[in-house]
Image: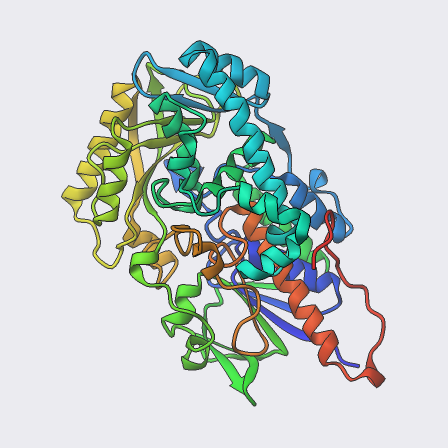
Length: 512
């Protein structure tokens, strides 16, 4: 019996994992990527002779990648060098207000007690316990399986899990839920920021997103070469297991025959036949018709009002003086609600919270000379209207003012800026949204599409689909898409022609 031919579109982490998994299962896999390197949002940009990571910089949940590599007969540690962080992140509100969260809960509680008093430290311990409960409640029935609806999630949780589902406060907002743990507004601001990891406002996002705090408390790692190096490692392993990866190969549309996907047509006119296609990209591109009318009917459109956050980023080689940066540092705005109100109205905030990734720091020691920095501020996903030069300059001025208020000054000869319009060009039809649909309201999570679509043979992976954004979640989406595709191929195969095959199976907790 012939090999099953599968085309994967997009070499982001979800597409790479899907290609790897399908190749291990014996499929003839062709991965098509329009860029000249793997990674998708996990990208780096050249600045003054250096390459600076310009996408995700926080790596958590390495056990998922451990499982994925092990299922392909490899070890993650043999392909990338991981270093655990002692300081998860440093946080600053002014030149005199600083707080480090550490990789040890007791040490963090001590730091919070010194910063805001023993009551807040006790609240932090209770918050950590609740965040861990939220993660445990959702891990097996939700994160590791096909996208369930609310009723299906309740069924998977079982009678004993229904009480747990209720206790994780699915109908409360994250900001509102934090009142039960913290009185200090700075701590509410700090832990509310986890909503932005999903591109959402803490004033609209559900309390269940406190699970991000647990994931980060379980460990943050840096990768030698950055997260773009992780993408390259998965790409190398996929090719070693038989997948073919073609860069500079933009897909124009899907080919449809007999009511199901039959392959793809490239922008240069080449056609590639396939039994199934995995699209690793934002579902907005499908709904907007960028891959043809049949594909448009396969996806639910994402209204502009439901888009997640975008960003304005500044990549620079700079001398950093006056503040002891660590690898991850957050400089908080003076009025968090005003910041998100401005974004909701489609404006850049006047006083933006700024995240700085000091990519040459693995501890407190400062490099001798200029260092590679990524500075990021949240922005509305309205990239259809490009920012003017004066707006970009004003954004950089307000960003530097926030850093200066905390004591940090930066001097750089060259800066590479990326705006929502630039992100929209990199990821068409998104308006620059970096996380797909925003997680606003209790039902938003259930509006994300799952791996299967309305068009037979077309499967989805990536941060805009279930289980959501972030490197580990997008990797898990590729795993889910590959497993769904393989299950459907086995189900469609006539019983008389079925044969045993080496198929990848999920590691860790079993899934439905």
